[in-house]
Amino acid sequence: MNESDTSGSNPKSDCTLLNPTQIDEMHQMDFVGPRFIKGYGAISSLHLIDVVSTRVHIEQFDSKHMDNVIAFLIKYWSNNPIPKYLQVDNGMYFIGDFKNPRGFSRFVRLCLYVGTEVVFIAPSSPWMDGSIENFNNWFGSKFWDKETFEDMEDIRTRSLHFVDQHNDLGAWKKRNKKLEQVEPVRILKDAAEINLNKLPVTDGAVHFIRPVDDGGRINVLNEALKVGKEFISEYVWATIYTGTRKMNVYYRAKDQDVAVLIKEFDYELNMGVEPRRDDIWKT
Image 1 (spheres, helix red, strand yellow):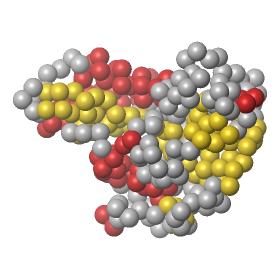
Image 2 (cartoon, rainbow, N blue to C red):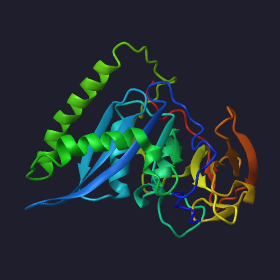
Image 3 (cartoon, rainbow, N blue to C red):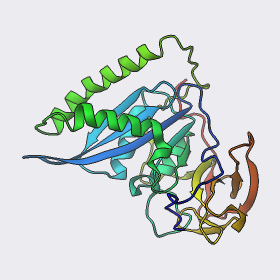
Image 4 (cartoon, one colour):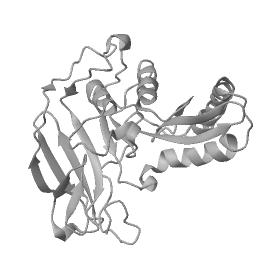
C-alpha cells in the first residue's frame, strides 16, 4: 500500500489523539483555489477556523506561498489568541520541501516560536480536516463559485462581509452552549521585531498523523521510520519533541480510550534548539 493512499484499507485505529472542547484549543487552516479572475489573474484564499466555535478568518492572496501564510498568521495572532494546536495538510506552503529530511519550514518554526503545536494530517486525507473542509465547501457554494469578482481588492472587501455573516450565524447556532476559552490566552506582541528570515527552532512539539505502509514504516519529514509490520494499514500519531530531540509514536485502537506508545526514536537535529520565550505575548 502506498503510504499516502489508504482508501482500500479499513484502519482499526483512531486517526487523531485530540478532542478539542474549548475555544482556541484547535484551529484548522487550508488554502482554496486558485481561481482565475478574468482581466486580473489567479487568486487563492487562505482559511482559518476554530474547530469548537466555528469562527473563521480568511484572506486572499495571489499565490499559495509560505510568505503569505506567515503574513496571514502574524497579522491574525497580533489581534487574536494563538491556539494550542494548529492543524494543516502537507502542502509545501506549510511543511516545506519534499526532499531534505528533518528540516523545519519557516511556518513550523514560527509556530514553535509562538508556542502553538502544528498537527500535520495524513497525506491526501482532507477528511481529517473536517471543520475547515466543511467551511471550504460552504465558501465555494455560497461565495467563491457563485459571485463574479473584478480583482483582489474586490474579493477581499466582499469576502469580509461573507465571513461576518458566517460567524454571526455560527454564534447564533451555539448561543445556548457554554463554550469556555482555553487558558492561558496568548496574543502576539511586537510582531515587527520577529526576524522571519532567521527563525530559530524552538523547544516544542510537532505532530504528524501517518499511515503505516506495507513495510511497517511511516514517512515523517522526508524520512522513512520503521514502527512495526503489525501496524500495516493503520494510522499512528508521531510527535517530535525538539527540546529533548525525541520522536514518540503512538497508536490508539478505535475501542481504546488511551493511546499506547509503540516506538521511541532519538531525533537528532542539525541545528540548535532555543528555549521558548514567554515575553513575546501581550499581558
